[in-house]
Length: 416
Image 1 (tube, rainbow, N blue to C red):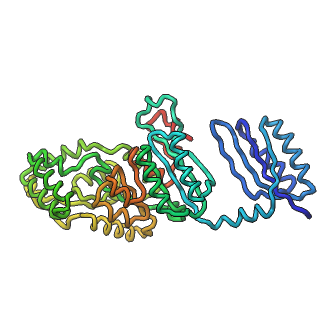
Image 2: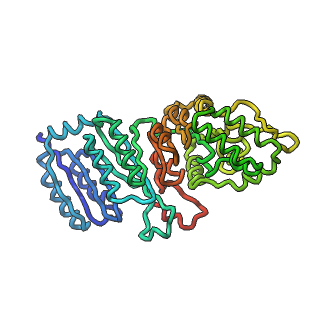
Image 3: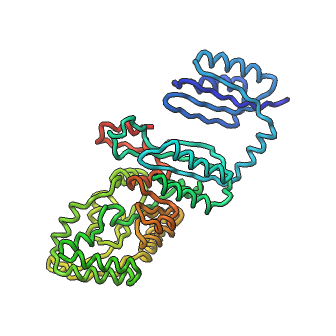
């Protein structure tokens, strides 16, 4: 028996039953399907089927497919595949696979061209492309916080991963969108724990600055912060000095600040999705437990580890209770939570904006710098600088169509 390999390409207006009708014909002739893929763009179908069949019936298969395609008002094209070429294609499946994600408020052809040029220059091949975000409106002014995300599945070994990553950072910085490159392994597909910094990550402020303003010591606290940023004192010493200046502040001020915290764009949506999918979540903060617990109650975080301010008779004493949660402690707590939950460290994600987040960003399986300074972004490898914190969902492959907000009557616009 002589075998033939035939690639069948079908295109045309999509409608229910097209794939079923065509594969029914293949089934009648006992054709073996070696590969199959389908995409639908604005109700236009592109379907590819690679089959192995006996050469004695290949003509009949193609004839029946042509008649059925005419009946369905789609086009069909046949391409013979050389057996050595097929075997060479099969041999490439052992090569590494990467996921490259690009996201921003909107993505242009220029953005995509720059990214795909880098992919080609590194000798990689794009196996698949999918849009993760919902359908884009023509009038962008109607959705000022719109998001666009495209995911590329890429196969091969880059000539230089470091050069590729550096080039992506240059493009992202100059063009104003975000690029992530991750190895597509089993851990990427089964993340289970996400740990977040709080101040300037989950909320758009630094709580100690808010407290200092209420205590009338804002300038003094900022001066200490600047000394720490210059490296004149470490985080722990700067923390002690700043907390001491809060002595005498009424506890009610903390409640007022908590109730008016500026929540970062996308927190609610992200937390709804993570909880629905069974993720464990934690706040690991160099800020204060009082505000972390407020967010825990509001959004359902599983853990909060931050600094405890001492309160006596309803007043802050200028002291703290327990160990200071600095960068080293954050990384340590990430490991402890993962161990307690029986989660491999490679299945963890950490998200933060500051230098004291770097230890946990580099410890986690996936570290994401969120609207961070250049040094933090470079060290973290993955970053989000253009959209809200729910962009984390796209880095783990979630699509907008997974999300349903029952309180939103326009949720149909999220479907892909």
